[in-house]
Image (tube, rainbow, N blue to C red; front, top):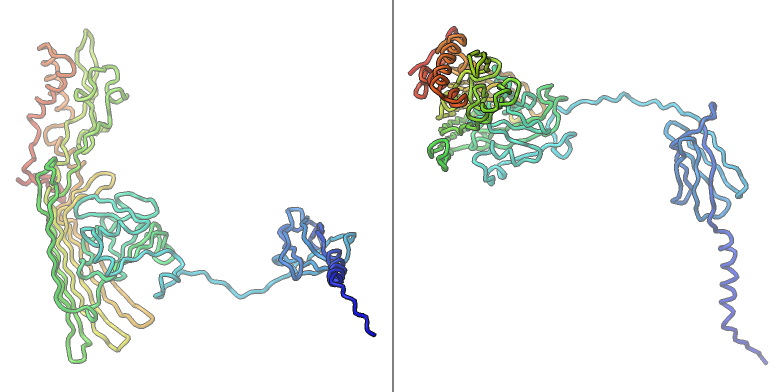
Length: 517
């Protein structure tokens, strides 16, 4: 007879018995020790200590000491790894085993490393510097008046408008009207004007019909393009006559000064034409021609803040009644010839004793010295010949004529400035050889501040003008006028002799200054 006993609790007993040894073998272990440099026995910082086969570990401190906790079972292996040292492994068998490791230095021989800028065509994503790009599609979709104005929407770019025809892109926070360290290239040619040391905006650059792309490097590009690119670079690429052919025309018309505050509402117009064509049965020859004409009324700098207000040491601080419009030593923004460095002292009897007053010449406002109408005429032509499928020889010529206002320490009226550029280029599949030259003529341009100072001197030297002002001032005071109105009346009397140039065109000659009416 067979006896069968049922024991449903037996598997639980067996499972508990088998689990007990495992729990006893895995426990939270505190691991600590020190790592030293072999030989000097100094503590070695920054050593990576890890448990082999596990994802736990730590680093040694500045004294080479380390400590961490981990759930492990004995024995286990610690791995010590440090840059410039041999890796070492030690087995830890018990909690009583001291951990003191000495790592030996290791010499490493490597090949020479050369760091250089890239001079070959490469993807923007692989470039070592940040590059922002406007392609043809982005240029067509921009709401800006022109592709050059659209540069202001590029990340990291600020555009400063000195004149209707003169816009200066800036990067890296150098928002100044003459960014000498921002390079502008057109098909690899530096557009920097020889006289001013900066590109004249887009005066001889491509038109919107001929622009293919614009790449902006908002960071330093001096490693590749020299010190002039320390603040960044704009690389303008035009369309190839082999790829983009046919006739293109655009006409833009707008109105500025719509508020009529400083100048009457005026028409702003721009016309551009592009023609490109290939020649010959094999189409190895190609050429393109671009013409552009822009004309408009420039904006007017008309702020008249006094830079030498009454109360300063150079503005009669003892006479509070000479404040505001009565200040005879006023040095106003956008008025030239009234600078404090050319002021004069006048001594007259006043309030029972001789008093000395500081007075400046009247000067001329910017609106009377600059031409309101500006223009930009530019033309370019390119002839290209394909020697082989991957070898192209081309000659390009650019011409630009512009007016406008350029601001440096003083403002400069650019009047009939012409710039020419000649370029000869041989381009292969993996090389480019390019030679170019730039010719500039500043035309009838002039500096506003020296012009105003010389116009003042044409009306009499400072000594002569000062004596006549003093006589007029004493006459006003003798007639019972108070000091402030007397100063105004004396200046008004002298202003009657000022050269009126509202309808005149100032011209700076080689040896003299004259006015052509």
